Every structure is written in structure tokens, then in C-alpha cells.
Image 1 (cartoon, rainbow, N blue to C red):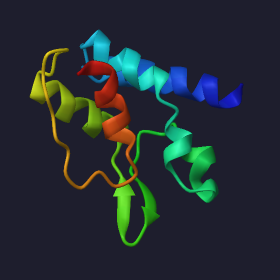
Image 2: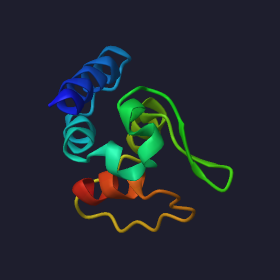
Image 3: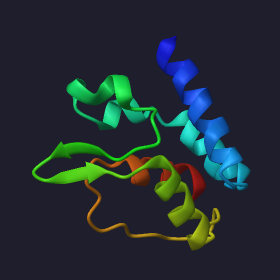
Image 4: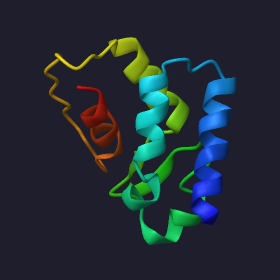
Length: 98
């Protein structure tokens, strides 16, 4: 339940930061970011910050993910290839949009 509250706060913060695409916001609400980060960082999964995932890599900051996807202007008829997927978080969000 705590992570649901944190997730809702994150979505509201993204909306306040100017993310207006409701499809992206809905996808980010559906995808459990805490499943894409190591257990040691799960309590921070819904902060708007990049988190380490190992091997010198990070899962991107949610606001950056939303802005990148917004810039792509994806829709349900788009075919997409994401290279350098890392944790798979952004790919999971994209799967709801394409």
C-alpha cells in the first residue's frame, strides 16, 4: 500500500512538471517501477530520480522517461525497437502505448 501512495504522488508530480500525455501517465501508473530496481533501492522506486541497477547503469528518472516517450509521439500503430533496454522499465511502459 505504501508503494501505491508513493506511485500516485509520483504521477501527480509528473503531471505538475508538465507531462500532459494521459496515456504515458496511465502506463507509468500501471508499471510497477519497484520491480525494475534492485531490492536495496525498492523503497526509493517512486522517487523522481535515477537509480542504480548494476554494472554502472541506472534506471532513468521517471520524468526523463516520460519526456522521452512524449517526444517520440508513439501511438498504437507504431513499431518500436528499444536498444540498451537496461532494466526494461521504459520498455514496459512503451508496451502499453504501442
